[in-house]
Amino acid sequence: MTPKSSISAICVLLVSGMAFFAGRQAGAEGDATAGGEGIKHVKIFAIGNSFSKNATKYLAEIAKSADGRTLKFSHANIGGCSLEKHYTLAMKHEKDPKDPEGMPYYGRALGLKEMLTAEKWDYVTIQQCSPDSVKIDTYRPYAKQLCDYIHMYAPQAEIVFHQTWAYRSDDKNAPSNMYAQLTMAYHTIAAEIGIRRIIPVGDAFQYVAESPDWHFIPDKEFNFKAANYPQLPNEPHSLHVGCFWNVKGDQKKLAYDTHHANVKGEYLGGCVWFEFFYGADVRKATFKPPELSDADAAFLREVAHKIVSEGVKPAAWPLGASRAAK
Image (cartoon, rainbow, N blue to C red; front, side):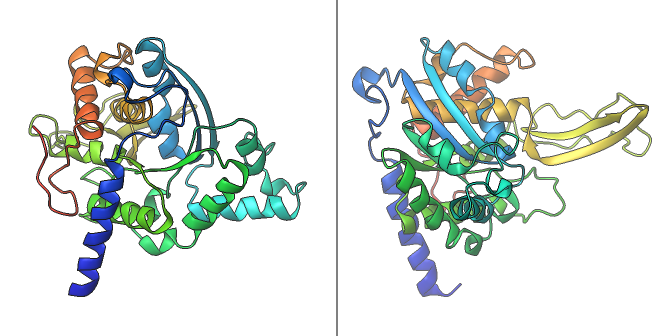
C-alpha cells in the first residue's frame, strides 16, 4: 500500500468511526436514548451464514431477560454464504420466481424478496463470509448491489454491517492480522456504500483475546494423537468451538473448529447485538446459558457494554488507537 493510499484508508476509517459513534437511529419502536432505557421491541432480518447464526443464538433470551424486551427475527441463512452468493441467488429469483435455486432459504421455500417483504423490518444486517472477510475486493460490488436490493423491498429498514470475528489464534491457515484486515474491510466498504453503523462483534472477540486473564492459551499437555473419547483439551477461555468429538454411530473422531463460536462466543455475540440494537445496558440482562458460570457471563456482558456503549477499542484496532476506557 502506498503512503497516499494508506492515508486515504485511514481517512475512510475515521469517517466511518464518526458515523458509528453517532446517536442511535430511532427506527424501531421506542427511543434508544430516552432515559437510557432503550428500545423495547425490535424487528431484525439478518442476511448471513453460520456466523450470524452464532451471534444471534441467544439474542431473544437475552432481550427477554432485560426488562421483558421482545424480538421479531428472521434469518436468510446459508452456511458459508458470501455477499456475492446472496445477491446472485436474489437475481435468479428476480429472473424466475419459480426457480428453486433462487429460493434457498427455509428448505428452498423462500427467496430473499419474500423474506424482505414479509415484515416491516427495522433493521437488515449483512456480512461477508469469514474466509473472504479479509479480502476487500470480495465485497465489491456485491455489498452495494445487495444494499440496493434491500432498499428496493425494505426501504424503511436501516442496513447494518455485522462485523464478523477473526479465527482463533491457533488456526494455522488464518493470517496473523486477520482481525485488523477484516475490520479495515468492513469499515472501508461501509463508508463507500453508506452503511452508517457496524455491529462490533469482531471487536468484542478481539478485546477478549487480548485480555490478560481471558486470552486463549492452548493446552500443551493434551496428547491429540493418543486422545480417547470423551477426553478434550483444557480450553477454558476459548470463544471458538475448538476441539470436539465428531460422533457418527460407532465412529468417534476428534475434530477441530477454530472458526465458529462456542457457547461463550455465542453469548458474547448476543450481548453485543442486544446492546447495539436495543440501546440498553446488557449488564442488566439476567439470562445466561446454563453452561456458563455467573462470573464468565458477567465478564462477557461487561465486554459487550465496553465495546458498544463506551467505545472501547482492542489494542489491535487498525488505526492503532488505544483503548478509550479500561
